[in-house]
Image 1 (cartoon, rainbow, N blue to C red):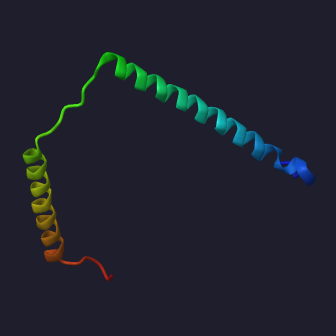
Image 2 (image 1 turned 45 degrees about the horizontal axis):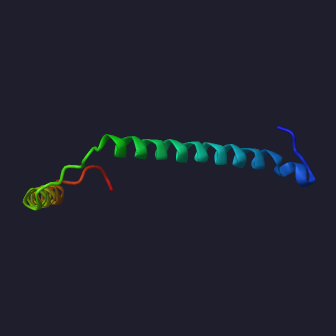
Image 3 (image 1 turned 90 degrees about the horizontal axis):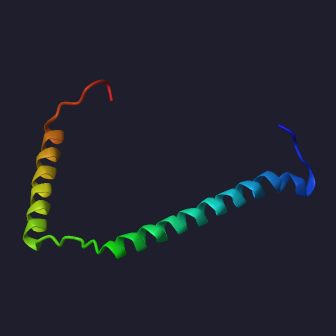
Length: 80
């Protein structure tokens, strides 16, 4: 790889930054297109019942406690 001196040493970095800027702008346009497409179709997001959410959280808490207790009871392996 050639080593540049002076302002030319920054040329590859500036080129990469410009390419990244172009990609980001393209992504922004595509995201806006997706937003307008979804809004035009009138897609509605389903609302979940608060009871369902609370029950899922409770189940995760129970699973977490079972997992932690299983780890605590596990015998260590090796010399660590």
